[in-house]
Image (cartoon, rainbow, N blue to C red; front, side, top):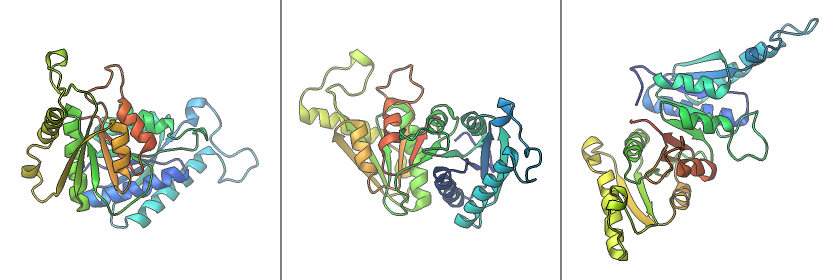
Length: 293
């Protein structure tokens, strides 16, 4: 990961119930990884040039700055309850929430965000802050969504790409610190598999196709037993759409890990279509890995 020694898990807080779920999730991650936790609030109001203090004649504890201080203190208290042995700090940083969290990412172990914030539209399944941070952060991003489980495997989506390998490494560490099984899922649909584009011959026979896709899966997991010798690993190659297969695998999982861009994505996309879709549909928290672990 792009993290220095002693780097923290960073979680965004905005006072919403979604962000408090993210705080509890982040506290657990920090405890398992023996890392400090930083609770960060992006304070946008100075950029909008609005008054930050109490109104004239109002109570001294009123005003936007005091409100931000209270919500950070509440988030820190929530984290301390969830993980009493973790060193926890809170900070208000002037700026838009997504930009503040992306700015934290080069030195963070991971960024944790809620799937919806106070500023989200009620009809949106996933908030814009979560999408932006997952798309641009320099470290893995963990989105608190779905059911918070303490049992079940860590599931990782595999497609043979470089980011898929990074996702596998992150997922292996996540499964190890949790003491659970790693389940690697490789979904395929087309008769062509890996290889340099059109130079790869089409595979038409179903048995040959499955053999080829199982090879992709095996190569993606190569060496995992040497790096994580105590980790139980299950591998499944399924003929299905990746989003459908990963969404199904997320039911009963405690974490789903995907690469930020996959083998078949459009080059102009910052966050791949598969990772974007599972952020909307997964039934458990989702980690998006865009940088080498």
